[in-house]
Image (cartoon, rainbow, N blue to C red; front, side):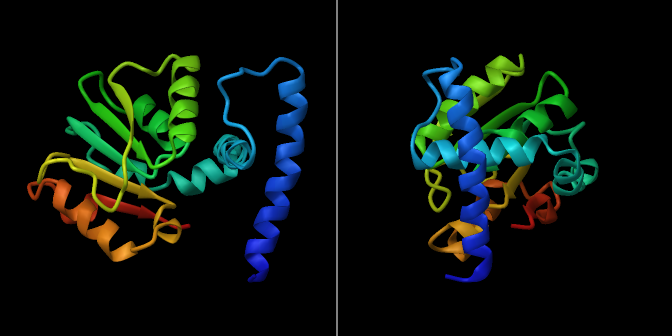
Length: 178
């Protein structure tokens, strides 16, 4: 294993200890368990870190959010970026978060509701390689830290390009560093 993978798993192990402690103090029974609990905890931990959020969401101001009617977040995990986008968009914008993990989608729904951000936000279990959405259906597509986690990165990029409207610059299918 490359050193960064080992370090990443070690960090996840440290975070999961805190999650287990919270669970024993009455954390929601609907939260993911096992390895997915670790992943969900890590996603939420880094999403709440001010430095990480500032860096990872630095491209948000460059997105045409004021004009966006439909936004797709591929590989949304627990919905950290979806919730951040919901805070920045108008009430007419519909944001759809997609992930292949039903447990992470359940966590995203719960966390979004807990923060009072569920209006016009939906989460769906889908494969980013083949979303089954229509051509040019979205104004903005984000792939936040997704590409390094998929089997066929080029297919996911093709899918993102297919579902984003051409009237919006193709650069609005945004990639965040993984």
